[in-house]
Length: 412
Image (cartoon, rainbow, N blue to C red; front, side):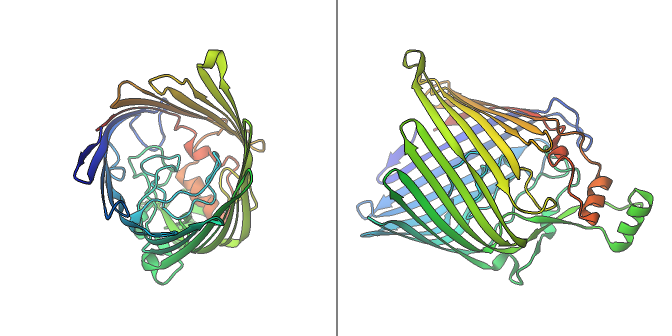
């Protein structure tokens, strides 16, 4: 329930979240966890609605993971609307993309990985954005001063890699480190039933690669004995490279069919590589007397990057279904199964939600890793990094991190 006072509008939410991991982790002692989160949205418009101020802070307090306890400004911006153009200055969130499996082209904002592992949550990004629009579509220019580092689960966090990520000592290819100014552009237009977007980004990539803090002497000892030297604490160091990425988004809507494609070409993290996620969603509406809508989803995820650097989703299928009950409680559920035919790994993901009242919403999420093997030991993981050897099971670090998550949110 939002409140309005003379051009000001304030709304927000408070959430209580409970997580349970059915299996014990070899790296973290606990299986149950509670956290609380809150978000506020303050809006003010003036000049007959041509100017808008927006402030959206977000915070979470976590029971076990000090790195998941954090504050962030998702948005703090001034928007001005002109004739055929619009300017946006400040901290904002921008989403690009059309597919379900991977948001390949979505590169403006950094991922808040510590908040949710599905990479859907983003940190606010400082930006200057000029948007121009007409019958030819919408063209956006972005200047992005200041880089946001990815957040990672701490030593006591779940899910996490077998070795903690030392985000405080991140490395940069650019001599300007996190002060480099990045730029991006995007042109979105439509031709009959086709929606098309072309984009380009040049700057520090939001997706890091990882190095180890192990020295040559310590590495030699590990390879010789199979164990770390006494007193050595392994850590992964994120490396942020300067990249150029060109992206394509396609959507074709016809009847109940929605065909989708995201494709990118990226240079800067080793050899240039290509990646794509494409497929369709077919919606059946009004089933069982108008009670149920079902959207059937199939996508194929692919990339050409060498196995050591590739995403775990480099040649995978996504099979999914979206259910909407069309009731007053807005009950809905999304079920997805990611399947890798090369390794037989599968990830089942279920997201469901329902309103209990006008101001209270409950959500239940389930994630299950199947045929992912056993989590590698820290020694095995560092040894593979030294030898530049790709894991046989890319999802094995999360093999014991099946998750049941229940949250209840109050909106005001």
